[in-house]
Length: 321
Ligand code: ADP
Ligand code: MG
Image 1 (cartoon, rainbow, N blue to C red):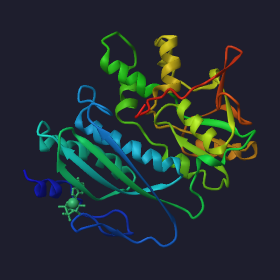
Image 2 (image 1 turned 135 degrees about the horizontal axis):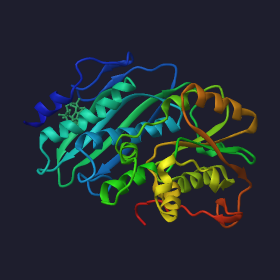
Image 3 (image 1 turned 60 degrees about the vertical axis):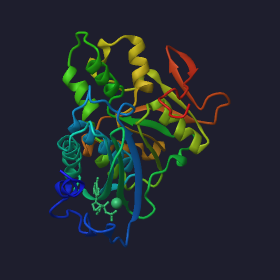
Image 4 (image 1 turned 90 degrees about the vertical axis):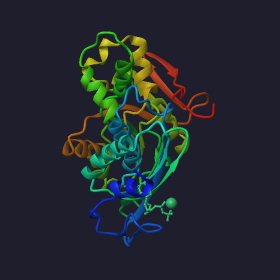
């Protein structure tokens, strides 16, 4: 199969978004948007660095790569609309396997009514997938990290550390329980789009998605907002079967594991009931996990654990270090 047959195989036969004038098939895509703010992000996934065929089927690789991108849109409060995919294909990958990657992406894209509107396909050494997503948010309602204020409530959706636990289960042969749950959280995570959209009536709310671990995302909000943060260790939500892992694993995975694609944020006490309502309406687990403080001297984020206050460093996976 040549490049053209491949592109034809991933091309949609019809568009879902009414604003789309031209998708795949010309030099560039065209859509028309007049009223809302446009939100866009790109993420790149390299085999051996961001995923491995030992723990993921091609379907999961596509699904999770797009989920990570959609999660960025959710963290901005945006509604996903389009995506573009750039693929570097090595000889060792069959075209059929790359098509499976696209089937994984499309499964998730369909659930949001997103259209694949373009991309690029080239040969190279490592399978590399770069995805650009585009979404909409009502004017002035994009959610920035920089708006946290002292005395805000810090919250997080879902449970943390599950994805990292899932990866552990896929690479270790030990006997564990409820492996399917953790593996599913690792391979096919659900971005919190509906929850973030339901916060529309709140005028000020900081949001960040958990891609690198809450330690890192909390520090990002604190830095951008020029504030500090205190998190209560016992309030960090974990799933019921998380206790089967060692204390050290639990601690590391919930703070630094990442890739849960949950949302964390800060909001005023006054608007906290509206956040709870949004969670109820969208069937989202929501936990209050801390408070925004004045900027600290040594560490931006502290945790209160066993009645001892200690600095939490970022320690997530950071490239170029
Ligand atoms: P051009 O030479 O004009 O850049 P290409 O041959 O690279 O055109 O691509 C033809 C069409 O197929 C374009 O609409 C492009 O966006 C789309 N396309 C190519 N590769 C991909 C891909 N991996 N995913 C989605 N669309 C793609
Ligand atoms: Mg091209």
